[in-house]
Amino acid sequence: MVILSLYFLFIRDFTIKAVSEYGFVSNYNNLFVDKLMTSGLLIVIGATSVIPIILLFVKDKCSGILKDFLVAPISKIKIIYSYIITTSIVSIIITLTIYFFIELFFILKYSYYNTLSDIISSILIIIISNIIASNIIFVISLFIKSFTSFTTFETLYGVVIGFFTGVYIPIGYYPNIIRNIFFYFPLCQTTSMLRYINTSRVSKLILDKYPTNTHNILYETFGVKLSFNNNIFQFNEQVLFVLIFLLIINLVIIFYIKFINK
Image (cartoon, rainbow, N blue to C red):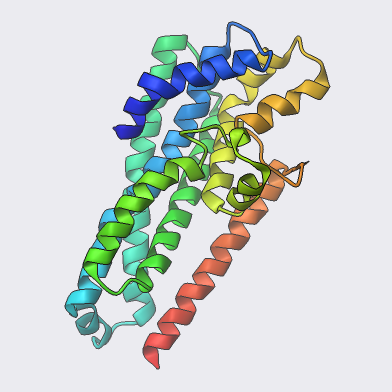
């Protein structure tokens, strides 16, 4: 609700004006910006809706309830992953519900329909993004020793996640060094992927009358595509990046579980 309020009160007009100031003037600017920002909003919703069940894990860990589970005749992996899987499922349901409401908004306001392939791709990206968010917050929770510390982290995380994904400020407005740091944040990658899927057809309508060498200005400035050291990361490379990250972070979790066993 905070992000939606900020968007409609301040960010939307600023972003529409920014697109025009970069020289891209068309009847599709409003549609492009709404697609751009709602895509970022969906990733943020997924990233923050994982908190409540991870909060339950921290509460169980700090109160000693987790120790009772761990001495039960049940696999440690099943116990730990029950939190992660439940977190992922809940956040996916919440995010996909809002996604379909957003799609309805575009149908009613713009008479704009996503293709079936775009919808399927968006759903897959949302699922992957929410699983990554669950894993990231869970790993962080492993190193937090008190319930109060985690609630403090939760507040801070809710504030900065909008900046990390380029929702509050377009990613192209950051200095190169900050953009290169954000590049390694996987939710920044999934935001870019979802934006690319949802804005690709609208972008082509906007860019139709502009020379090819200007296209990347729109893509990079507004986070449709990400670049590292001025080299644009392709969509298939982004997919590989997030899958490798997901593999690595799960290896960290499994290592933690084995550490518990010892």
